[in-house]
Every structure is written in structure tokens, then in C-alpha cells.
Length: 501
Image (cartoon, rainbow, N blue to C red; front, top):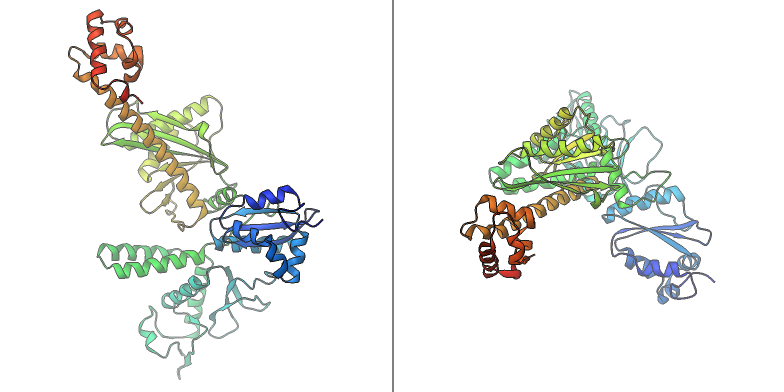
């Protein structure tokens, strides 16, 4: 019997999968009874899209091709992604790999825009196309964001002085070319009259930019945006922000998926993209992140959280109280806890992580490296993540890296950093709360430092002390029956059990 309805006699596994699908973007792969992939589709909501195939009305109103597909489906797989554009890219990748019988799109990249530069022209123009031909032209792409791509080309025209498809250049009597014959000539950053050779240099520079080889322009634009914001020229800053976003999105490389294992989880995708961005081969499967937490130099603590395969490994989380000094020095604190962590791993013969992430900039990275020098231990890959602009800082001379905020690898780093921050702050709050509870002893007359230390050594914290009887308090060195009874009564007058946590 064909698997046409999840509520019919079709396999329960299919029924349950359809019911449990998330309301998130992704790609779905439909399989026949032999396990062959027969259709690949994308969805902004996997739950809504896939469920729609199995409604009773769909079987009656669909085209014959859709009805035939539904009657053949016996099982399905889904892959969640972060956005609909990412789903579009993955859909195309999987269709090309499996060539499912019910898919007819993506055969020739017609959903993706390409940038075509015909080098046979005397003045090559930068045109948009959806079909790649076997000619002398150069093609860049494919690009998912059509609107942002058009905005990028318009900005490239201003920056590099290139011609787009709508240009009508005019040859001058001296053999030069007048590229633009209207007011636009005054808006662009390059001369409007050029020789063929000069224009060829512009084309080569623009092509290198599309290949992703030129990041200097983006850095210049970011500096201009910051300067405009500082001068309170907010309209100009917003304009530059939009241009930067368009350029970053356009130049973000198409997602790459492992050929042998194309069905990957979002965590695996993020790890692969992060490894690619950082130049790490293979991708970092284990990562550890350090964060320092304090309030005005008091209650200085640190946290170390560990991710394995892109997911929290909470059994390996560690938290530290700073022991080597008293005061507010994030760098010394970082050096101490990094040294303590990897001295232990070294002494126990356990492997170091593939990547260490430091919450902070170059100073914190330097402190972490000092710890490895002191241990005479070669460090693994190590980066800092500066929160203000989410800038990735390297310990060597490499230029700091700013990934697009939508980059899955950056999002993974943010989750790791934020988890370390949360864990450190939680520990800091616990210590402050404990200190506040213990401070009640300051108001009990006649309790000096020695007796107070003896109480804490015996009971551990104020809550256990408050729960103790007068007779139990009397067993502590320095306490007699009278003092123990007075302390017991005092503790219950100043809050009793209601203040315990």
C-alpha cells in the first residue's frame, strides 16, 4: 500500500517524523521503499511544508506529478539550517549530488545569479546571468542574494570605475573612452575617461575583489563607518553599514558540504565553516573557552567551558577561584587559569583541545600564551573573540578577522563564549551570595577571625551553621556553652531558615 497518508497504514516512523518536524527552515529528502532519495525540497518551515504534502485535499488537487510523488514516499530525512537562503544552497547541492527523479530544477544553476565578464569585449562589462556558457567569459558565483548582489555591483562601479550592463561608453577622437555620458561621472571615485589598458586594470581589480582576494576595501569602509558615527553623521554611517552588509553577504562563500557525508547537522556545518574561516584542517572538533568574571576587582573567578562536536560538554566544565594574587588583573587571572587547566591535562596525559578561545583581545591572548611558555607546552590553535565588534584576534601577525554576523562559524564561537560568560557569572554570583550570607557574623559581638574560621572549617557555610544546634556549635574550638547558645539564638533572630538557599 503506498505511503500516501501519515494516518493510514503507512509506516508509523513516517507518521511520527511528520508530526515532530520543527517549525524551522531546512531541507527535506523524501525516500522510496528502497531508501532511494526521490525528491529534495527546501522550506522556510519544515513542519508546515512537509505536512502540506499529506493533507487529504493535497492528493485531490495536486498535479499528477505531485500525486505520483506522494504515493511513492515511504520515509524522509530533514536537515535544519539557520535561514532560508542557506536552505536554498543546500537544496541545490543535494539535488546535484543525488539527481532525484522528481526534481527538475537546479539542473543548470538557473536559480542562482552569476556575474559574467566577457573578456573578449574591448571594454568588458559586468553582467548578471543565470546560465554559464562555455565561452571566454569569466563567471563568479553563484550568489543567493540577488538584491544584495546588485547593490554590490553598483558600489563596485563607484569604487573601481567598471561598466555594468546598462553602460554606453563613447570612443573619443584620441582613442580614449568616455565611460559615462551623464551626471554619474561626478559621483564615481575614478576618472570617467580612460584608455583600454587603464580600464583593463580596473577589470582585473574588480575580478580579484569578487574572488574574495581583496579585503582592504571592506576594512576601509568599516573605518569610514566608524568615523562617520563618531562625528554623529548617522545617515552616512547607516549608508556605509548597508553597503558593508551587502558586500559581506555577496562575498560569503557558498556553503561546502562533505561529498561522502552530505547530510550533516547544523553543528557539523558550523564546525566546517569555522575551520575554513580560521584555516584549520581538520575542523576543530573540541573547543575550550575561558572567561574572567569580577565586580570592581572583587570575587575574581574564571570559567572554562568545553564544546565537543559543536555542542556543550557540561561534564567537562570547570570553574576557578584566583589563587596567585589579590586584586583586579584580568591578564594575570587568565594566565593562572590557563596554566592550571593545561598543566593538569599534561600531567594526566590527556589531549589538549583542537581550539582554545579566549574571551578578550590581544592582551588576554598574550597572557594565555605566557601560561604555555611557562609549562614548556606547545599551544594548540588559539584565538581571542573581542565582543565589541565580534572580532577574531590571532596570536600571530595575521589581520584580525570579522566574519559576517550570519556566519554559522561565528555563531558557534558566540555560543561558546556566551556559555563561558554565563558559567563564570553564575559562579561569581554564588560567591557573592555566600559572602553576603556569611557577613551576618560581622554583627555578632566577640567573634574574631580565629573563631570565625573555626566555624567555617567545621560547618562549611552559614546555612549549615544556622541549621546546627547550640550543642553542635559548642564542639567548635573556642566556644563554650554560653557563647554557643548566644550565637545560636543570634543566627535565628537574624533571618532563620528563610534566608537559606
